[in-house]
Length: 277
Image (cartoon, one colour):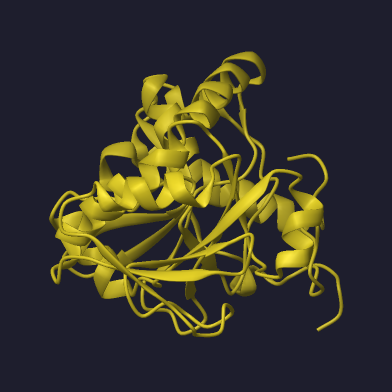
């Protein structure tokens, strides 16, 4: 299909739902949340809807947009515009980001890992681009690799993972990346010291974590969507307006129909980079 307008049946599924109907599976980044609170207060616009996955017997799980959802909650909004899809949609991919750490020597990182109860590590000679089989894997700037192991139960080792990543989360000495080449990392991060890779999470893992009221550390889960709605630019006042949820949903679906009629929706097949995030 060439770039162009989509038919209504091919659009991402958009709904307005109660904020109490969605649950986070990962921690928000509170620095980004603070910036979003300021931006939402200033311009009153939600550009990109958070993405939620639905499954029978579970609340909608936020797959992308933990910071936006948290900021809206802090501002007291009762409802939120979301893009919704089946959690078990075959086109939905769950991966993990890598974390590029700066300014922390390997000795300090290992000392911190040793201080976390129940977490052990061993030297690792696997390929860096392969998925870790344990909790996580650290590759240091000199090429040395270590693999981490922890508790057998998911909700317990996620707590341990929080404790491990707390070292660099606390000082914000990291960035999430999708590549593992050391030369590129050293070039892009002047003070690069280590790359962290994580074991991927399954859909069942996300259901289990939300059941136990546990979350993955911020910036770990990477969600690949079959289609993504961007730049909807809903006025936040509509989410706060004294209308019922049903009335807001009716307004939304009518608004989408009008956008289709106006040929205001574009589809781009090729990978697209935004330079204004």
